[in-house]
Amino acid sequence: MLFIYNLVVLFAAQILKLLAIFSPKMKLFVEGRKSVFPTLKDKIHPEDKVFWFHAASLGEYEQGLPVIEKVKEQFPHHKIVVTFFSPSGYEVRKNNAIADVTVYLPLDSKANAKQFLDLIHPEKVFFIKYEFWPNYLNELKQRTISTYLISGIFREKQVFFKWYGGFYRNALKTFDYFFVQNEKSKILLQSIGFTNVKVSGDTRFDRVVAILEKDNTLDFIEQFKNNQTTIVIGSSWPKDEELLVNFINQAADNVKFIIAPHNIKSEQIQNLQQSITKKAVLYSEKDEILKQVQNDKSISLDTYNVFIIDTIGILTKIYSYADIAYVGGGFGNPGVHNILEPATFGIPIVIGSNYSHFAEATALVGLEGCISIKNQTELNEALSLLLQNEDERYEKGHICSTFVQMNKGATNSILKYIS
Image (cartoon, rainbow, N blue to C red):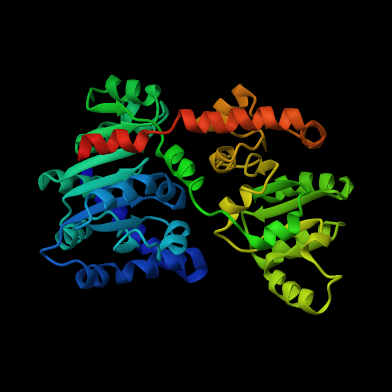
């Protein structure tokens, strides 16, 4: 089976090169891997002590960040190597300050695994949530390098739990320990013979709790909000925006809206802005407006009703200004985006109907801190209720913040074991 797997990897490598000719994302995927080994040779030396963290994409990196930070704190003389599989993670976090080296993970061939591990010679390895690469894992086991899965989550439909999943079950045998998010994942692993499992919880709770200790001030958002009730729409997709724009256009003028779309391509941003009849301003326009304010006091950000964020990296801070949050993605696949960031600020949340694969969303809908909607009527009713009833906003927001606080602690649970 491993022989067939390696043939597939080699074949995939050639196909990806062809796809890179036509796809900018695939070009990043292919071209970005060409510099991995030279970078590692330059930045990792034979005498270095190294910890390696692997994240599939941005979400997994954010999930593992609390552990990376604690490891960096407890082992200040070790170097941290962070790898990404996808461009959507690497391109956003390639210049992160926590890692000594951040690179793409070379494709999972035997040769790549050997060369990669020869260069970084890690003392401990952490795979975040999922991604199980047989050649890397087999090579780690042969070298007796401690390997952990953190914030892991398993589902019955995964290949490990099928009669034909023996090849991937063997890959799991390379892990020294599994730190999983929930009891169901532990039971599933135990059902196929793994007892080296601990329910540590989800490290994302620790990450969002830490956000509260940071400076989340954004002066331009403060000016725009001007103490008005504000709805922050985060990571919205076109289907979300279709419903939300209808609501925005008929909303009272004393309600402010901040929209941070998932896709910030100029054409989509332009279409969004044109569909809004309220006075809307783009993040990319704010500096020019602020300059004009110095010469004309009648011009101000607070005269706008809608602020469209056509940049990345500031949504978390923006949530701190929200009275109500709408989190997008719930009308598509794989589903709703991260609701824990607004939840940690004690904000009531509205989402679409596709959230069943996300434990935190399922829990908060059940606790009634989060409202799930299926259509325009339900969206209008949910947002109107929260706008008109301050007590309802407070109660649902309190449920959200309490839920986050009660689920923190996964990072310390993991660190106690590996230290």
